[in-house]
Length: 304
Image (cartoon, rainbow, N blue to C red; front, top):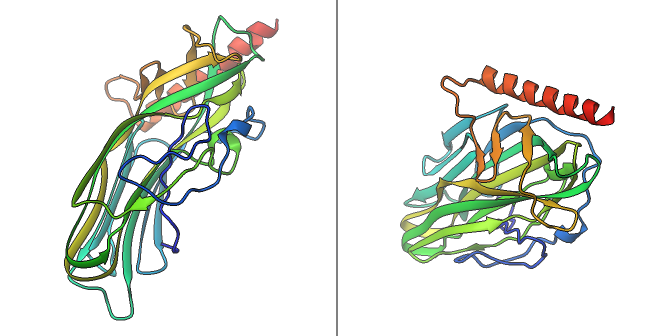
């Protein structure tokens, strides 16, 4: 997969420390979450990418896009031993990758599968306790859970890895907000189950800004012989299970509301689909349009 390290994104609230979630170890991608400023670039609306990549040395990519929920799965046509799936439903993100086989084709020394979801949304935060134009901070905590493994009779290396956190759509930066990474050949079985706060994002009350959440899973087999398999199972999903809005002094605000272009519900206990029977893509679009209308009316009323 372009011979790069698989990134493990761990975002530590308010710090730039290079933490690695067990059982992963490895390289670090430079970043500095302490230089964040409120968004000045354009907003993007909302949408979801499901990306699947397979290859021996160079990746072959399949990308699907949807305005809301998405689901994509594929077995690589050049080798049925490589499989990946990626999905987002109601704000919950899940990915899975696996590789297996008795042997590599002649002349090849690696096979990999990579599955990734990139979700982005434009949000508006308001609070009767804070005036429009004031600085605030948006803080998410995600719960991430998954299983990883490698079964081999004779294998040189079967590294697996994951990514999760904010990607480049966040604050319209065009680059990851705070990336740390690694991959590791796991024990016969390994597991991750953590609540991880993401770095607080600065924003201006009354002005829209972008967030972008990513979850990815990678499985690789290198120079193996005999029946071998490796998997990275993040189908248990990444969920946002906490949202806090902070004032300019990082003091939590109790009463606030968030209107999102996606039509998803942003509450203190996380992100979820709006609980309405028969909700459809059209319903999400209508909800998003209504949210924007309410936000504009509030801005107009506060200016008069």
